[in-house]
Image 1 (tube, rainbow, N blue to C red):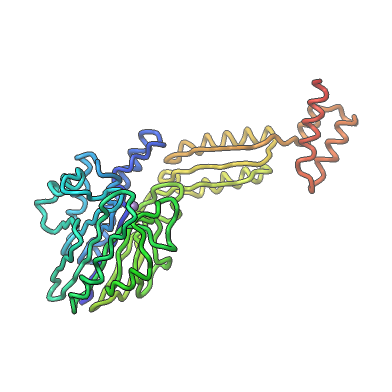
Image 2 (cartoon, rainbow, N blue to C red):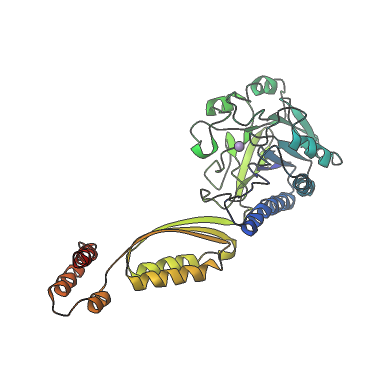
Amino acid sequence: MPIRIVHTADNHLDLPFKQYPAEVASRLIEERFLALGRLVAVANERNAHFFVVAGDLFDSTRVKVGDIDKAAAVLRGFDGVAVIVVPGNHDHYANSETEVWRRFRRATEADARIDLLVDPAVKSYDVEGQAVHFFPCACPSKTGAEPTIGWVAEAAAQHATGLKIGIAHGNVTGLGLDAEGQYFNMEPAALEAAGIATWLLGHIHVPFPTSESGERSPYFMAGTHTPDSLRCRHAGSAWSIECDGDRVTRYERLAPGEIAFRRLTQELLSADDVAGIVRTCEALDAGSTVIDLQLSGRLSAAERAHLTAEIDRLRAGFLNLTEESNIHDRIDAAQIEREYRSGGLAQRLLTALLADADHPDAATLAHRLIEEVSRA
Ligand SMILES: [Mn+2]
């Protein structure tokens, strides 16, 4: 019988989202609990034996008590053999006084299936006669450099049989993004040398492997389970992993997130471009999208007014819309006709420059110079 594991990490429950208005922040905070609940539901549908959280379940070591209870309630919904929680760097385990874990223990003591693993010691389970050994490597601090996985190879060698799975949290050389900091760095060679079936990792918020499904991988990076910032390009991720005997035989990526962050960077040079960016926005699922528009280019006064009106209209539909625009004025035929005497030098010069497609800024620049000179 295959052993099935659902692997998540970097849930960052209680991430404050301070940069957003209060009602947007509370929706984003709530989504992280809801998405974890969706993932537990998928794990149950798939009859997973283990639900593994490879660090950073919480965003910090000081979390509102109510939210610790809420997290515990979500995890309690798992129907399998055990939920295994290992502290990451954001929710590191310094000692038995570390607040978040003291309270988490209290919140979960009634459910023996929730295992908080903080010590570097093998934890073995018997699943219908099959031995499954987990090697948890909790983070002792937020920004440590010392590897946490060093003990695993020797401990794994002491178990001749059974499925052996490592759990750790930190950067992996070659995979890291600067965004998360290269803490508790692990070398791929060291991960492979541990002599276990695979590693379930957290820390880098992007999933690894890069394929949606496959047959084996020396390690898995969960990726945050629901998007957490404009940097996040995936739909939230987690892994469903199947093992047979002492190895991984199949994996599949899950996508429990329901909120997206999108940054659209666009140069606008015409009414068509304005219509295009509006269409792009309208094609998004606005109610569950946090959008950030980074607009540049040159527009006529009329095009610009239209853009502003359209953005105001769109703003109402989006979960959140921010805009950072750096758009210059562009003179057009209507404005030339309005402001300059027909047949005069300025009108003829500007009309000719406007027709020069190779130099789209020329007419606008000339117009600005003429204005300056005539004001002087
Ligand atoms: Mn982390």
